[in-house]
Length: 413
Image (cartoon, rainbow, N blue to C red; front, side, top):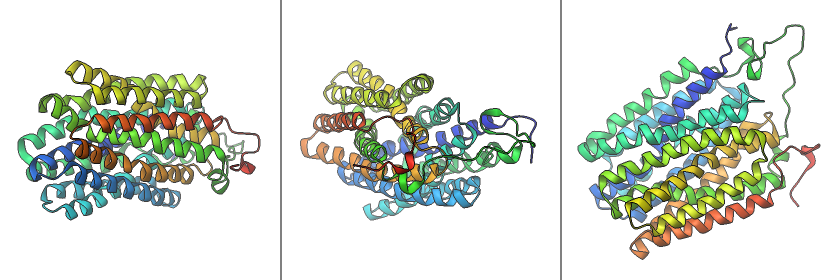
């Protein structure tokens, strides 16, 4: 059905809201659930962190499945199913009394989270925007941080007062309502059927639509660029995800519960501002050096957070970390789309995310184990800083993100 108005920015708004919900109650919310499970059930941080690792492991594999589904089915249906599955799992979290049950619930929750997460949402944005992709993706992915500002502190407030059993059904309901109606109201899968081309140009019936270009999937995943940025993201996101999942517990141990609730809000708010600035900066600069620099700054922030002993020092480190968090995550789909085009983008990105999520699944487990072994978070965050520095080095080795003249024949050395 054609439309008199370009719907691209309406689609970006829908993706923003969906990512706000899935991130606020999924990605950032896991830190709140870790803290609540530790306090209410008395379980070790390392054992709960292992369940968080399982969550990201399952999410990575489901992301590859999601890419196949959206290639053959309406992306809205895939995301809506994810919203229902995730909501049911989250509502069930409060009923968990045994650690094996937590793994089951987290596995189901990860399935819903991934079906309504970055793979389908960034795919939709890349279909609607080519020239202005960095700006559109920066706005849509800001929903990831908005979830940490709006939903994660509210979730902690609710669970602190009502507990897991009474509070999680409400969180599950919010997860469903923040995804299912939104995808059908605001998101249109692609511009062509509405009479538009990407970036707001009208379809001309007398001119053939431009062919979809890009590197073939099987060639892309063999390229040096794909291999190196994937390794870099395993290291950088492993450090980042591990640190974020332990952040509430770290701040509560060193300050108060109320201050801990503020920590994710400050992190996410800083990430919002930094991502919007970064989305405009990368449109006029080389993305790979920028990505490497962000990973190096993240290293500084993580080590500083490990040694911070005062409230001012903790929040200063959180602000510095927030400046890197949003941009590093946003740059992964941008790097892949710029280098490999849109032809096989969902398959290429989902494979990169699979390796990234399977690798970063070890971040929460590593930091949780180091916490229990050392009796604090200093060693945990120093280790995370070392991982981030390793990611920066690998990014510098990956080469340019600009597509080569013959990308389909470039293979790893």
